[in-house]
Length: 156
Image 1: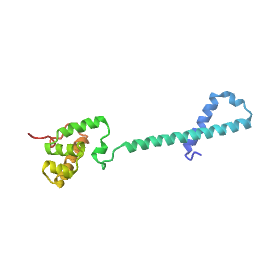
Image 2: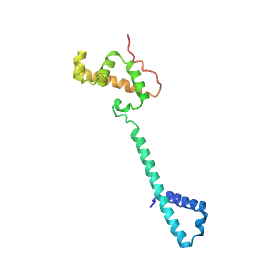
Image 3: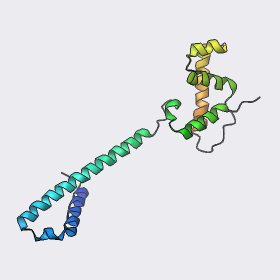
């Protein structure tokens, strides 16, 4: 049942530990004791397999929760701490980047509508949006410090 030798040893060890705790089982006739030990080892093996499956599922859930650097920034932002930090970084962007991000993600406007509103082409909107997200990504995931990137700050 358990292909890993160490896991099989664990099952047998757990069985004998249970046998030690329940010393009255040692008074059973040999055939009954042997059958009981086999049943207990099978149950301990199943317990070990279930625990490993649960642990693997937990590890898999944890691995799935780690954002991929290839995912869009908006998908990677998952916690309120991240959201607060992101809004702080957005407020430090220059006016054009901040406006385009707000119109795109908060007002949910298309690039064409944003371009009409700002008086620029949809291609320029896409370029500015790309640059704004790059700046945000760089600042958000910058592990060296929590300070805002000086290139992002709007000069007045």
